[in-house]
Length: 371
Image 1: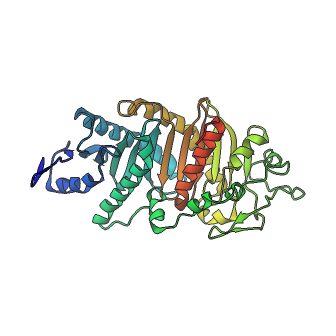
Image 2: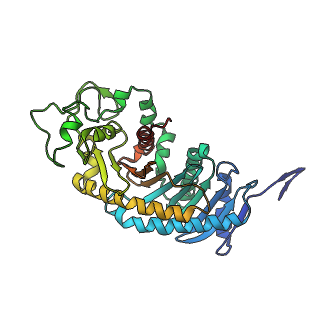
Image 3: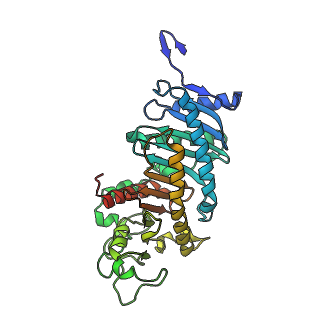
């Protein structure tokens, strides 16, 4: 307890599982202001797989043994995500800087602070997940600035602070404008291109180029048609790919795959051929990215199964969404009730938040849920 005149202020619970030092004590004081008994009651700082600091909010209803459970959970996240890093490295999209694991009743967060150092957080309030996520992003960047590292744009939250929030403005636009970059759903749209071999040019005799508003650099809509229709491939009738294509946007979600419970891709749609995305393919081709996204998509159910086994002691319920936020964009996993799942990708770090929203909306559409 800290005494301040007649007032008594309860201090956060602090543990140093690997031993205390003046430096770690100072770091714990930097972490404590982020805590909130409702929104973000737990934070753990790791050096590789070793928990160095564990802080729990004053007033947290969880008993002290829960601290060690969170420490073990963060260690498991470190091992599981480290196993995925070689596949992510093949994408040439930078390091994994932020992971969000969501269940119906809460979420876990695992942020890269600097090489070998991560910050783990947990919330059991589904209505406060985004706020907790932003708090951790802000806290980690404060830790980085304290040792003269530059900030990282975790979750595109740094873009929000700059006021550069094109996806927020896009929400006010019409549905058709939101879908700029997606192909037409007429017979000359996805149904016509669905049977075309991956990478093949569109039929010059068809009118496959989508009409209507198109986005140009800066996000302003114009009346010009898209200069290049998106690449669409599917293992199902064209309508399946068309539903995915309608969720795509140059200003947000760039790749979508709907996988069956046996991990096979039921339908795939992407905008990787769009000329405005050319700068993201300086060191890797579009077809190489497609192949590697497919490979990562096939690996994600195994990761999710291991996460479910490892995290059940801390947060109840089956995992429903995972965000793998890399330095250049993000990969998303969204579980579906039939055992299938969606894999989404944005290659633009500024669009991570919008892409997350778009994938969530598509998941609700596919399951007939509201929201």
